[in-house]
Structures are given as C-alpha cells and as structure tokens.
Length: 323
Ligand code: AMP
Ligand code: TRP
Image (cartoon, rainbow, N blue to C red; front, side):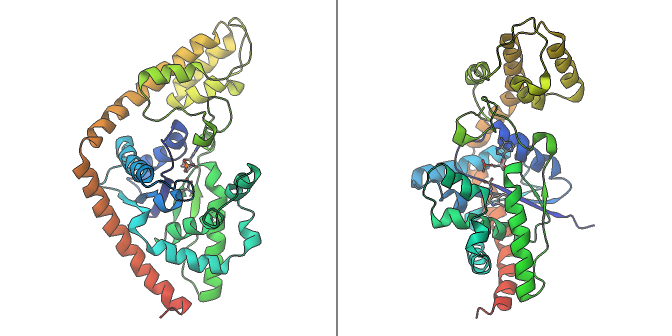
C-alpha cells in the first residue's frame, strides 16, 4: 500500500525550543514510519526576518542537525532545504496572482506584525502563499504543525481550491495534523512559548541553563502548604509534557494534596527536562561533528524533493499557459 504524503517545515529563524519539539517535531518523528515523510527547513521563509548571510546560513544548518538529533531518520524521511526547490517560489507567484490582498490581510502572522508596530515587507505579506506552494507542490496530504499554523493550512486549502477551479483539478486538499494537548505549549511566563517572547526553554540547553530557566517559571503566590490546581499551574503544564500518563497523574495528585512548594516543583521540573534533553543534546554534538553526513543527507533529500517538485511544476505551467 502506498503511504500517504506527510510534509512539514520549520523556519530557520532561531534556536528551537521545547514548544517546537512537542508541538511539531515529536509528531514528525512518531509518524515517520507510517507516512511518506518529507521534512524541510523553510529558509526562504526565514528571509522575511533574517537578513544576515552568516546568521541565516548558520541557523539553517543548525535546524537540520536538530531534526536529526531529535530522531528523524534520513533512511525513512526526505530531509531537505526549501532552497533545494526554487520551484516553490514560481508556484507561489501563480498563487499570488489568484489570491486577493484583502484575503491575505486576514492572516494572523501578518496582523500580529502590524499590531506590534512593525512595517510588514511584501514577503511577509505573501508568506502564506509560499507555504501553500511548499505543501501543494509535493501533493502533501497531511501537515503536522502547531496551532499557530492552522490558518496557513486553511489558506493553502483555499488557494488550492481556487486554482483547481480556475485551471482544472491539480491539487489535493491537505489536512492539518494538530494534537490538542500540545497545540500551544506555554512558555516560562505562561504565554505561548515563542522565540519572539523570550520565554523559551531551548531544546538543546545545557543542564545549568535548564535549572536556571525552570526557576524562572512564573507562578502565583500560594504557599507550600496550599493545595494547587495542576490545570492552572504553569509549572505543571510544562512538566506534564515530559511525563507518561501514570507519572502525570501522580504529579497532579501531589499538586492537589498541598505540601508541594513551587521551589520544589520547579526543581522536579528541571530534573525531568534535563533527563529528556541530556541524550538528544549528546546525539546532537555527535552529528554536529560529522558535517559530511549532514551534507550527504541534504544532498540526497534535496535531489529527491526537487525531482518531485519540478515534475509537478511542469504540469502546473502547462495548465496556466506558461510556455
Ligand atoms: P516556528 O518556530 O514558529 O517556525 O514554529 C515551528 C513549528 O513549531 C510550527 O509547527 C509551530 O506551530 C510549532 N510551535 C512553535 N511554538 C509552539 C508552541 N509554543 N506550542 C506548540 N507548537 C509550537
Ligand atoms: N510557516 C511555518 C512556521 O512558521 C513554516 C513552514 C513553511 C511550513 N512552509 C511550510 C510548515 C509548509 C508546514 C508546511 O512554522
């Protein structure tokens, strides 16, 4: 039986954090056996925020190493850079010509930037169409992402429908794959964990930093003796990600029973985080020391993905009337 096509990507705009892991990467790793999995680094998208050559190159490569350290297996997964498929920018152009300005103005990613007083570039404005091109050029069927990307997948379906309607059946409509309980991983301050809020626990942090960051998790002022509601405790909401169901219930019970102070709860959190990060951080160091392996993975993945995309683009060109 042919496997369904799964595709997802992450921008290379900063160091990955545990929100990226639990919200997205963990799903890539868990699904890689059952889907025809294609994972990439969205380095064209990164140019909307990073306009520094050295920095962009470094961050792009780092995400590839991060993916491998998290357990993506290049034997099973097509791992590539978005820039190995320049065809996506051409497809994005056709989409930009189909979609309207008022429609794109509804994008949360765009509205957030404007609300924060930033002057959005035209690239940021059309960002969702480039993402749609990433997804549709490979006939992707499922797209695992965090909640914040849901609207982009809806935009992708809309533009695919519009294209099919205008030029004839060309694209399948992809589905977002979003797990409810990790759709928004909270940060140290209780807001969504995000590199732009400075509230993250980096995915490959050193033990000392993990300890320091866990101590910074924001709490209310209940005293150690008070019973605490795990559902509203920010420490618990982060801690539960690292626990299995039994451990989670045991810890929740400790919170409810009273007698667990926040200092102790944070120390327990730090222990769980360190236990999880330690091995992947070591694996990451090994991969980092083997640049030839990383180059080889990217070369293989890039060629494979590009071959698929260029074939699809020929079909698209002929439908649009591009000679
Ligand atoms: P970004 O770093 O914003 O490009 O996000 C990369 C992937 O991680 C996307 O699928 C996001 O939806 C997901 N993600 C980012 N932050 C979080 C978070 N706090 N909770 C859950 N998923 C997240
Ligand atoms: N916009 C996504 C993010 O910020 C990254 C991305 C680009 C992506 N193209 C994609 C995700 C295609 C899934 C599929 O995280």
